Image (cartoon, rainbow, N blue to C red):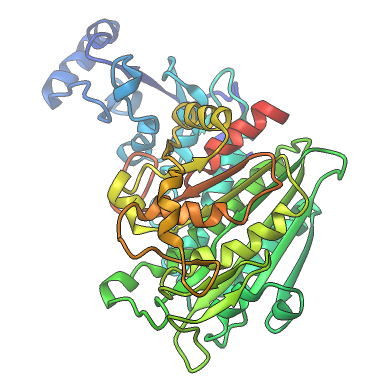
Length: 460
């Protein structure tokens, strides 16, 4: 169980009561006179996200009140409970009434206290929570661990997280869950027909690689996850400006999401044959860098003209997707910090997802809202695919029009998937720009908990 959780029934915990503008008068009326006077004196109002510690006669904390939204789910912040620990002293607490969704509130409690402490110690002492009634503490713990793992990977700067270090993280995860992990590194990528992964990573002294984790019974349904693992993206010869390069340590955020999801699947022991593929590279600049106008083969046999070296994510993904597709999994899902166009369309908190499978899209959207990991389906609009035409190759890696960049990137990837029963592409941001409930500023695992909920419903 997670270190911030205590087993259900643990005694000695301070109660937390969730209140709305409607329920607050009744809750307040049950308190003692001096406590009511205290609430009036501090001017407490049950606004969403606001907490107040109510003292007893000796000045110790007798209870905590926390404002939440009314029952209008469309306007409720699903991780609002993540604001609680930062407003109350360290100690042991329990939920005294229904927060609306006990599992989601418990998860928000934990991940809201996340701090990246590799280089700077976290100063705050934690607030502990008794597992709410009816909540599986292990399920919450697994989701919290996956979130912290993904956030740690994304937050680690590129000098300490290159392709080799990303492989090491996957190997550590594989060892923990007794999965088989192999890799194809450097020049071996060419010999084993992964030319695009090699081309993108060739300019860096840190060798590119494809990391392959396999877990589970071969007789179970095959579920394959692919994560974009560009550990740093300079843009290549189409060099990014310095302002656009500042956050490029997070360009492996898709890999982090896939790794976090793989942990959840294996920890839950879902009856699937799981495969995790991470093409891990650094898109650097040197005499060995690939160039605009170059043409390369791909694992699938399609030739690709390079229209822009800063559209490298789809290049490493296409070889990994082609490999994954060869064994026709029941579900093939890729996660990638792929386009700025996705952020322009939907902002940093709402990743667009693409699929031809209407049922999968509906399940994923509903699951995302339920678990507080929202996604939004955008169309694979085939009339835009013509923008990827090339005069000298089977296709270009970018369009010339500049419109619908997230859609055309998804259409590029779509060319490399044929046999999978269902394919899902998530164009994630992998970053929280400003602190939100349950989401400290920094690296973020997106779309993974939503897809896990779908997998658990289908296979659990």
